[in-house]
Every structure is written in C-alpha cells, then in structure tokens.
Length: 181
Image (cartoon, rainbow, N blue to C red):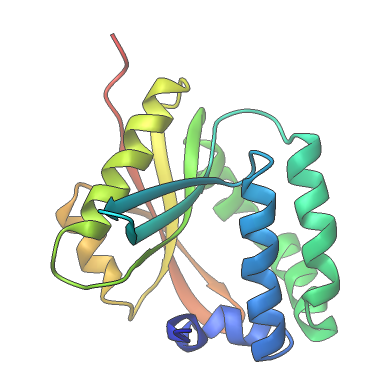
C-alpha cells in the first residue's frame, strides 16, 4: 500500500499515526458505499487508475453525520483544540467558502500513475457529476507547496482564499461549472 498521503501536513497532524490514516481511508471507502462522500473512479480494464472523493450539493445527510462520527475518534486531541480555534478565527474563510453554493467539494484525487491523464479524467468526472446534481461550483483546498496547485490551476481552478490549517498554509480554489442544459 502506498503512503503518499503521509506527506500531507494536515493529515499527519490531524490523525494519530499511520494506523489512523488507514482507518480514516477505510471509513471513507465504507461511507462512500452509503453515498457520502461520493467516489469517481477512472479504470483501465479492471484496474483502478485514479480515484476522486467529493461531496455533493445539499444539506448534511445522515450518512455524512455518521461518517463524521466514525472519524472523530481518530483525530488527535491537539488537532481538535486547534480546529476549534481555527473555526473561531476563520469567519472570512467560511464566508468565502459559502459563496460557492450550490457546489461540490473535492476532498482529494489519487492517481496510480502520474502524467497519464488519469487524475484529469477523475476531475472531469467530479465536475460532470456535480453539474448533474445541480452544482455550480467545485471547490477544494490544497497545500501551498503541493504540485497539485498547478494541476488545478491548469484546469481552470482559481485561488479564492487562503488559510492556515494545522500550522500550514492552504489555498481554497474554485471553478465555476457550466449550468446543465
């Protein structure tokens, strides 16, 4: 199993070690089977080449609340305290995010092979699904030093806000989708 996500600063600080990271992704996968988060897969034959996890437009559902309840015990107490402080001081960021409703929020894209278009194809699936469900925007956060920042910019995503989260700078990016019709 690849540990690519171990290099994500917020994930390392948020979860309680490698076992918690595996449990986190297991929860996401099992929750996706219940409809939250959504999963877009790009396959080549029977092999999955890229996966995108994302939320859909609308109010929180029972599945979302259940997923969150399963994830909370994996979070470090120090993270929970810093998250509470971050929420209290990030009203401007919250307002910036609220401006992109209705919309989908991309949690992450993971590609088995870089540079072959699989990540782009997964992103296109997310955008198409979001549009079909009435979303007008796709938003995401990316670490300021992550090469994915350029990946998203090349695909029409623009910086909307910045925030410090878990001690690192993240950029909120958004893309306006074409209305279905």
